[in-house]
Image (cartoon, rainbow, N blue to C red; front, side, top):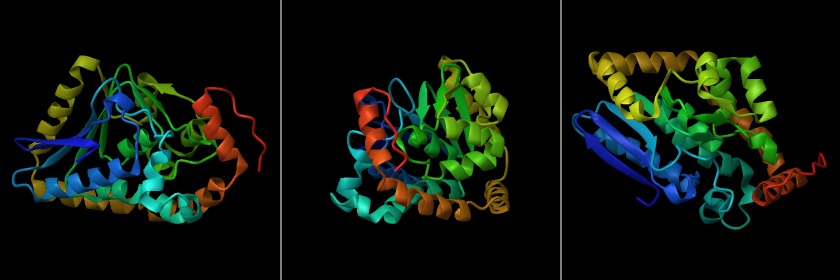
Length: 262
């Protein structure tokens, strides 16, 4: 695989984002590889838990803006004319992770932004290092979090807090993320992996069929399909707006955008 590494350790199956030179910037091809890895984990004898982490200085700095998230390779140079399909390409792999019978734990350190956070929201648990910086900044480039981020964040932390994070694009620290219920636990950076392993050990004390059944029931209580559809519908016209072109260019040039509202 080009964008991730995998490794089995006893009952744990590690999926590692492996673009450290790009701060693990997310491309749709990376998400597709993660979905493939989830299938491999499910079919590997003895595996009971997925551990998701990032190689290098951060978990993920978010969307790969320089490569437009890999969309030209996935759908062609005119990919923007296929907005609904583009959104579904991002949603489906993360949904695959959420719907896996295997519990998943995301280990977040340093920057966990945008599409990186959307990926982490697809996991069952999130453990954060004390240095974590979290945000969904899509509105600052003229888009919305459409890979399940708007839907899952709202279900996780409530409407008011989700609006605060998404409508401002603000960044929050580890203490705030834990207070809001976005992460399950905050630990020292050096203890991040061991904390994930400790949580996995607790899950391993429980019967695997019961864990899978409980996960299915909990997921069914808060279905995301309706929210994913709305994300797709609302994102499509934004792809064609002048604001999104300006927002992306401004981010690449590291300047304030000049919004036109059209």
